Image (cartoon, rainbow, N blue to C red; front, side, top):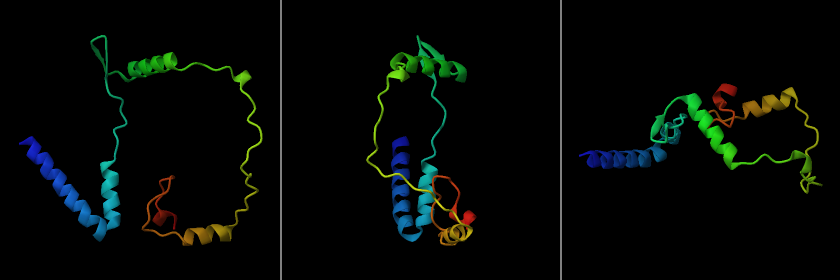
Length: 123
């Protein structure tokens, strides 16, 4: 019964998304973003047969694990990187007319950038 419900849901979502990407791409990407929401919590640990669910204790366990795996390097003996083959960026000149031009050219229907501010808000 549960397997039938799962496959029915998968078929519905597949059909729904197939139609949606053609008819309304904005709504399609909104649905995909909703599906990708991650749970930021760290799962409980089982140590010596005991379940650890306290955040502080889990943090200490992770810290202990990483401190055992990674070593602390001597920062005084790091060699110099030398000359970079990539050119450096010169001074940037930001003007009010330039900013206004960039803001007015924004397409309000597009997705937010890495700053998570929607273009319609900026415009």
